[in-house]
Length: 291
Picture 1 (tube, one colour):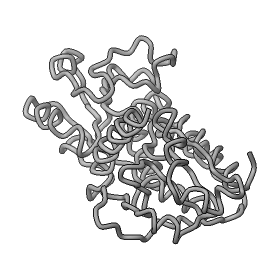
Picture 2 (cartoon, rainbow, N blue to C red):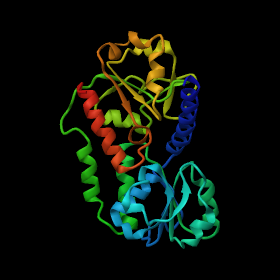
Picture 3 (cartoon, rainbow, N blue to C red):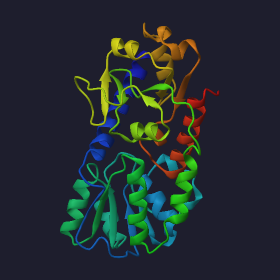
């Protein structure tokens, strides 16, 4: 079990590197010259873009990357897949769909979009590492598909607390070896800001960190001594693994039974609109002290 937890932690760390590098680029979207024109045949290479395009205008989505988030979602059952999870998109499959726009994730999709641009296919590279950039991306895609973004934007607002809730000191742990926690410059950190939680790792600087994340020592965790602990579990066993750490039972969050498990999608990687909604719902519970 110990080896499995370490292995899954390493896999999560690698996925964080990919996602964080995607989030560390300089602009909300990078586009080919004609991207802002309307598109009728769109292929999406990220789960979040697939979801947003489908909800804005499902008739425009002709291909998408595979994702476990949509494995049982009837909305996407007839949409051709051009990749599966972390496997690179298939260039031939994309070209065969005759898209007039391919939407990818900056830092992850660049190799394939560079090839597509050489073939004269318009591309759009996106990143979402804050609530504002989620809104901006939705507006951009709405303009491209000639749809009204307001209903979706209004739905996003329902995910956030209507009034200020408790703002306890909060520590999010996304891996154990190394111990990683989101700073302010990440989707998770920004989401905590939206809930007015005191993210104890918001401004910390680790000796080695994935962009948007800091590496913490056991001493740093003890020094922070958060009121709320959130453990992002990519699979069962990570929380149990943390419980074996010598510092665990010394933390006030542990003593007061304020330890919560969250999924990777929604809190670390936005993933999909439903995943974001679920994460926000769990944050409301965790920060208010409910169980």
